Image (cartoon, rainbow, N blue to C red):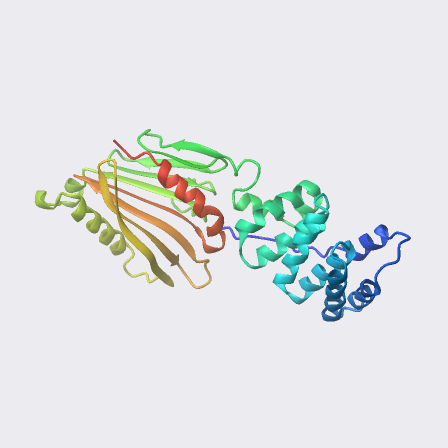
Length: 316
């Protein structure tokens, strides 16, 4: 599975400061902050810079020293405050957007980090590449293609769903069971896995395949049967984590069943995945699907997953 990768860059504040100096006198607190920062006394540098911003909240150097000192101290609220002010004062320069990205990223709020990442890449494409921010945007489908949507259709044409345009689709069907995937990473063989995407499974003539009696050939029984069947397939394997967050009944277009949100972790060193799991049934048919990603990316993908649920065209 893919994991988010970032190389946090050590931007040089003071090369920028010296280039921006004018003949106007600078606050003594700013000079003291620079001296402390160069001496790697980041706590003192932060204190002096904070004093300077309180005296004059328009001083670029004070906010930059404050933000980068806070970065060294892992003071996320101060990083975000400095980034917000710098991006407001100087929206065409990189430092404010970098600090906003960094603060949100370290809080694992990728949804809030998206705009600063895009702005940073627009302003400084080289830095975007060397810091791997372009790869993060790709992995959360917020690159120039992935942020667009596309309607995918299964090979049989019976199912369609709207998901990021940059994703891949593949399907396998034996005429009775259709397994269809729409995923961030391309699936080429049964041994392939994906970190983000949807799996859709349509089982027809289920009573003949599993010898289900006619009296039990109804949606309520089939949904429970399929849920237990999938659980039985996992027999002998105990996941590190499986926690149902919520579960409710649902029905649509002649299908009925349940929808739930689940946190799942295969092994201790694997990321925790959050899934939307749905099992629907009608007479002699089951349609089950999941939409999932690792928990760090959930805030970015959940809105698109919810839209996908609404857009999904079920088999007639």
